Image (cartoon, rainbow, N blue to C red; front, top):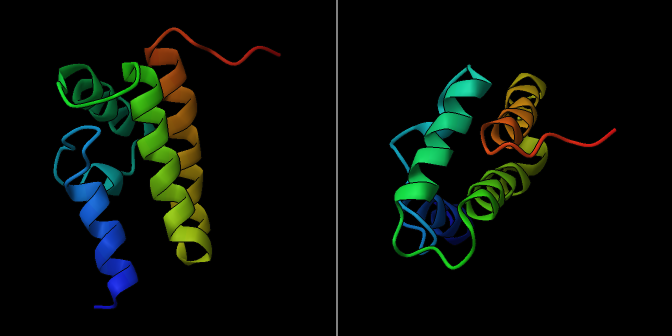
Length: 95
């Protein structure tokens, strides 16, 4: 494993922002990913931002670190998880 992969895996597994449930980003259901991130953010006593911001930041971090290695189907699920996360926190996108 390269240092880069090890570093990003360490961040998602042991973030100072919050503790994530195991395999949270592997679900095929965007709603489950969002619910898990919401739970983790709300229960964390180490996060520096509001729960919504911490959860969204972790999701964006995961997507960005995967970059072009992220298959289109996974990217679609994770992008949908952003919308589900907004809805879970009552922050739906404004049109």
